[in-house]
Length: 174
Image (cartoon, rainbow, N blue to C red):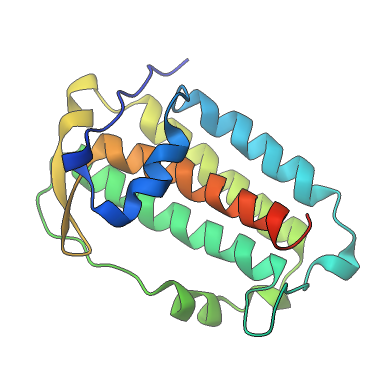
């Protein structure tokens, strides 16, 4: 079992990530990543195909696009964790989530395929987190023009998915 990741201090991430970090408070990361993955798979794995392209409002992402976004964000945040966890101080660029969603064409895929991709990505994140040395969690770098620590990225990885699970429940009725 990977070691528990210490929670980040408020000066280790940009204020706009606070909601994601707050979602991770009290969770044993990365063990909670496994539980979260299982919850996402259970909730969306049972969703009828007629609901896969459901949008809760005009111009909003479909369920499939939301899962495609989770895949992209998992890659981006885990890559940042890798770079910063390894002590790389090279500033990392941001990403425009809406442009990524449009370019991904997730509605041309199936929901089971997208869930399989997310599961593979999440398992890679779990392995990355499991094998970062304890001292690496305090490493800091720059992403999207803002300072961030490895442990903040670990919390954001959890909190970002938790946020979208809430959106699925509250806005999509899933």
